Image (cartoon, rainbow, N blue to C red; front, side, top):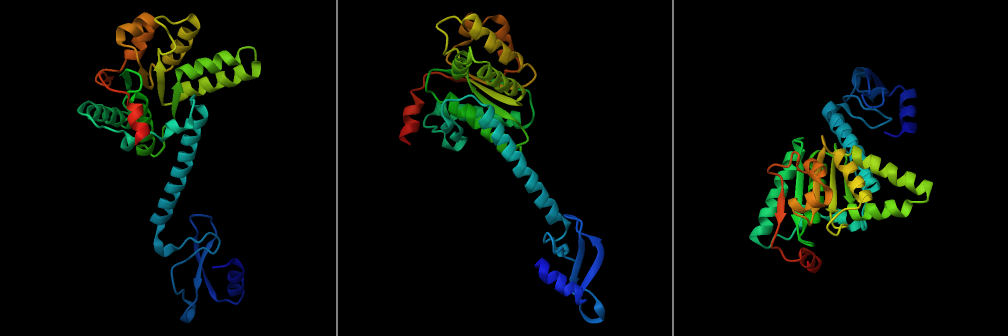
Amino acid sequence: MEIEQFWTDFNRGNLYQFNDLCPTCGHPLVAFKGRNDEPLSKGACPYCGYRAEKGHLDIVKQTDEFYRQARKNDAINFLTNVSVFTTFSIFNHRFDKFIAGTDKQRQLLDQALKVSDRLVNNELVHSIFTGGTGTGKTHLAISVLQDVLERTAYRKKVAFVDFQELLTQKKNAIGSREDSRKIDGQIAKVKQADIIVLDDLGAESSGEATQYNLDLAAGLLKSREDKALILTTNLKGNELRTVYGERVLSRILAHSANNNLIFNSLSDYRLKEGAK
């Protein structure tokens, strides 16, 4: 019903005005009059289009969808603006795009799906994806993030951190107060995320971490003591201990029982993925 036509019909006395107000915008509900000035239908709102005959459930569904879309926008903005990455295309990774061509890869996919299930159920999970370069660790880790977002109707805040890229940005910001404030603010938001992927920890080291690298890693991992973490690394447990020390390793291993994925004896997954 157009507003102009509504006022014309209203002034002519052609409309019946209900005592009920529109649950969406608060205006009176109206309907065309029939014989004896009785309404010909249940009320409708000429301002927002609400129709009573569809029932309040439709409005509830519309409201739920509105808030879901708002949560989605908020969650995606958080993921893309807070995360530290080198190429935006990494966020295209999904479980259904993972090429599981071997029994080992199918096993890893199944394990990653179980990690996602636990996170959706709000379990406190630390999961270590360890193995050689290019074996699909990052693909499955990001797939977990995306899956959890979708299955929780975007009620969680998640972030991805390429540790080598974070180190590069931190070092490049030295000498610039504005740049340092920006990257430190970004790290602070990462620490607030419900779930983070800390990607490629250890790739920046050559057998031992500098104090600078160690402090940055330790700060991030300390913030995950009571929050979910997925960590990808080329290093084994004893190598992580050697590089980062017992305290950092204990923070990584906390809550990790039955959640870890071992990507051993796999060929370079990225070659297959690029050929798909």
